[in-house]
Length: 132
Image (cartoon, rainbow, N blue to C red; front, side):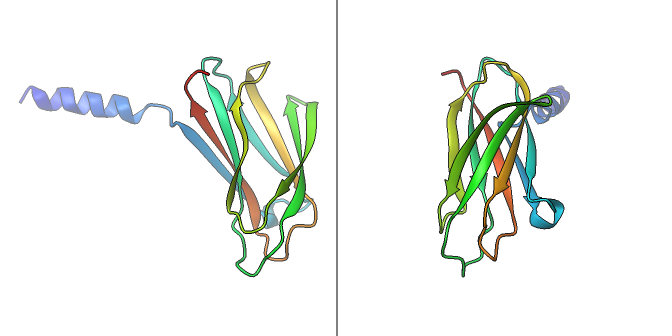
């Protein structure tokens, strides 16, 4: 009988643990200007992060598409880069082992250029990993 309260307390404690990853998806209809903004918590300095991008491709689409990635800290643009999302892929690793010079909340804005006709939106997976 004493075991049950301990088991319940342990279960509740573990259920409150922070998940090891966060996933976000923005539908095309929710990004009318073609900008997809994701707020990522990159504040834990003891961790590094793997960031992946994903789409829900239309099986008829046979071409990849370029996109621009812009990283903001607050309202300040910190860096921009051009990417290419390959054809036939649902998920691609964008960056591995990320650790920001300034830990905290960052905004990743993605702007697809000429996505295929069946493009329905884009998502981001932020996976927390142990120290590098």
